[in-house]
Length: 442
Image (tube, rainbow, N blue to C red; front, side):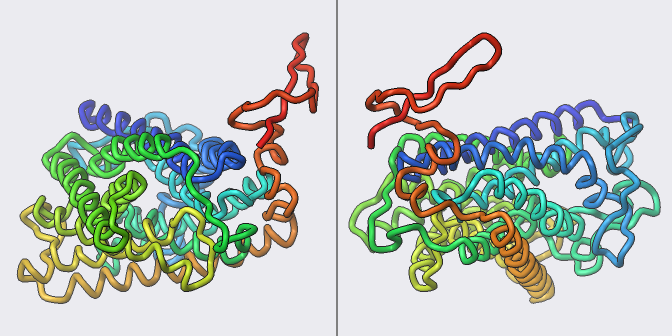
């Protein structure tokens, strides 16, 4: 029997998580230069389309189907989702339609690969990027989702899930490993393969539209309630706990990031406030359903401080992770995963565990550390291989000329801001309508 209240909550949460992708497009779009904003937003937005197809054809089945390889991957019996409209999943008394759960998890896959746009911003070609997305979701995201999100018995009596959730028993409520550490490690690998932007780090590459950044961060904060509280899979006390913990951690992270800026640079910035909010949301993602609000406040504060300091890592490593995916998502996810080992309490979630500060000793901490290390290593190695192969065969990196003149014009024959009208560059006919695409002068 389907629980209609839980189903409504899950569908609403899926819609909120979907909204995070255009929010991320705005966030990233404002952080790049004017000549690259459309390309960055396009690479982000198109993940909704590409991953949606992959998820339908085989992604969901491999991630959540009955395990066929020692906790490493699911089967293909639910490929295409054909004939499953009446199938339900979840514990008795709280069953939801499989389609609702599949839609919710689809949005997780979309936003995770979309985060990687920040590592290649201003220099990635469109069609090779789409090929990379398909390969990366298939080889990196789907296996990790199976390891962490697929629980024994969830898809039906006797079904077997992934090894991190069911053998290691690491706690990850909403994706600290699958989404955050994964995207951070993958961003490092991807940025290393595609190379630095022309002129980086000598030339300043300032955000062209900070209002975009602030608005995008607000949309991400809003959508994150679906991301975290929706992972309770029902309208429950656990969802309320996750909701409150999410906004608490984001709030303290903003304070932490701005304090670092004040002491280090002498001024708090709007970019810092927006980045701090995202860092706190990242940090609390794995533990939002396992800690109490005071624990969430500490986790958020730690994530804000650590992620702000970690922004400098790319300069020390010489890797142009353009929009700091490693610093914010990778390091924030790592902080959140490890601090579960300190702040987790069965008082927040009886299905969880007690961390070190709640009498649980070091048992949960080492499990969290192993899960984080495995996710990081797997993502880093496989992403390196996938990115290298796509770059060598299709050319993931735009030409120097395209990057210099503006990748928006080179890849899409468009510009975000028509500041001056020049003679027509291209005329195309769609039906009976002729449209002229004007160039812009920079």
